Each structure stands twice: as C-alpha cells, then as structure tokens.
Image 1 (tube, protein in one colour):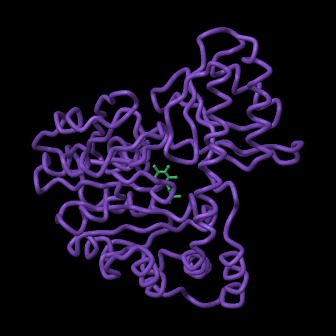
Image 2: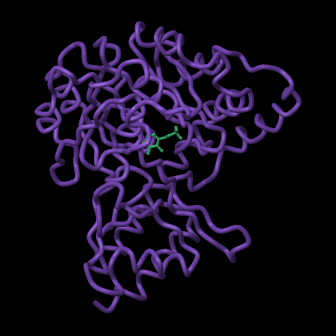
Length: 364
Ligand SMILES: *Cc1c(COP(=O)(O)O)cnc(C)c1O
C-alpha cells in the first residue's frame, strides 16, 4: 500500500498561479496580467534568436561566458560573480535550495513576490511575512522577525505587485541590521524601469558584503520572458555554490544569443522605459479622475483598489474586463483582496482598459 511520497510540506504547497492568458481562438484580447514588455523585444534580439536556429543541434556554452561578459560590461560588474539562469526564478530557487532546509525560515514582506515563499516551502522551510507600511517593505518589521533559524531574507525592489520601492539607504540599513550568516536576496526584476536617484538595484551591497545577492531578469524591460533568462550577481562564495548545483547547460543557446543582442540594444531599453513612464502616468491620471485609489508604481504595472460594492468590486470589475477581452491579475494570493494589478501594456491595450473602467466609474 505504499507509494512514493514527497518530503513533508511539499503537498501543502499551493502551486504558483501565473497571470491568465487569453483563451485560444477568442476575439481580440489584451493580456495585462504578467507585466510583460509593452514594446515586445528588441528587433536585434529577435534576429539573433532566428539566427540561433541554425545551431539547435549544439549544446549551449554551459558557462554563458559571452553573455556574462556583456552583462558585466553593460552594468559595470565583475563577470566572475555573475551566474545566469533559466529566468531569475531559477536563481531564486537554487539559492533557496542551497541555503535553507527543514526547520529553517525565510523572511519576506507581507505583499512581497510569492515565489520566495513557494521556494522556501519546497525546501521544508517556513516563510515568514513582515507587515508592510503603506504597501511598502518595512525594514524594521522584517528585522523583527529574525530568529536563530532564519537563513534568508528576500526583498523585491521595486516590489511586485505593490510597485513600491525602498531607497538605497534603507536597503543598506536592512543589511546592517542582519546577521552575517543570513543571505539577503535583492530581487531587482524591475530595476531598468527605475529613474529615482536614491535607488540602487543592489549591486553596491553585493560588492560590499559577503551575504547579499542581487537577481535580475530579461523577462521584463528586455521583453524575453518566453526564453527564460535571468541572472544573479553574487559574492564569490555564493557564485561558487550556484555553479555547483545548477544544471550544466541551464541556459539555452537561443536565450544566450538573444540576451546578448538585447544587451547591445540599450536604445530599446531606453525607449521602453520612457514609454512605460508616459503610459503609466497617462493611466494613473485617468484613474485619479475616476476617483480610484492606486499604489504609486515604479514598475510596469499598477495596483488598483476597488470599492466593496456590487458591480464595482475587484471581482466584478475583473469579470467585466475579461468580457471585454482585457485580462488583469487578481490579488487574493497576495493578501490584497479588493485590488487588481494591471500591467502597463501597449497604447491600444491601455486605452481599452481605461475605456472599460471609465464606463463604470466616470459618473461616481
Ligand atoms: C517578473 C518577476 C521576476 C522575473 O522572473 P523570471 O523568472 O526572470 O521571468 C522576478 N521577480 C519579480 C518580483 C518579478 O515580478
């Protein structure tokens, strides 16, 4: 009567629910549920991907050498401390696998990105959630949860789904309040959208301390989510650990080729950043005019609060948007009932989204 059983805790995990995709064959739909690039990918990256088709029979470079060198050049970093992965998700999973186990705990913020808690649970560790202040990571609340079984702390900066960020000085204060044996992971997936002078993605802390890692992705501003490409910037000892446990060919050849070309097109990144700022401002101006509350966002998405009224609440508005072909993200899993998260999409999608809301809220 026995069958193979996973380790304790695995079956308690609720699988991560990605942003919904349009049903195949549906009429024109607008996917504003996964914070994908509004401008797609750089044409140079698409060309490089197409050219890689001729080499599909070969294994990729297991060390992602050319890609790491280019990341180092563009971001002013040390290539030997960079580890590439199948999305930053793989880096987050590998770090957790390496540094936490049964009986340990990790700390993240109340409305922080959920992948951290899922990764911790898959390793038998307890995720602890620190209260936020004004939908923003609260350093003191995070530090207050630390005990002798704490092994890691995760901060998404800016955070998804709230869109808020903490300045460089606060990040430093967080590190200074942590024991040296706790690994601080700064997930800077939206760093390229940031324009605030008091912001740093986390690389300065990595250079300064042995217990800070920064993760980055090609899924957002670079528009390469389909290829699964991300990286971590690590202290040498952590890079060594990741290189021991990652798959020997964890980043595909087309992903490396497209990533390299995307890095070479910083003009596209600048365009995407400026487009996102203008469209996000346009959307938030409209939301304000409708009397809707939203969290100030520094990413390519907006977290919007809806009234607790039949027909106008988050669930009903999500259904209404869906019936009009606009897919947004529900927030129940993030303990943000009453909210929806909408990505900043292309002009047509954003106008469609605002048009549907305006019909409901302009009169109130
Ligand atoms: C989208 C996102 C990522 C990126 O994940 P990939 O695996 O690189 O696609 C990481 N962290 C946060 C907070 C995100 O929103």
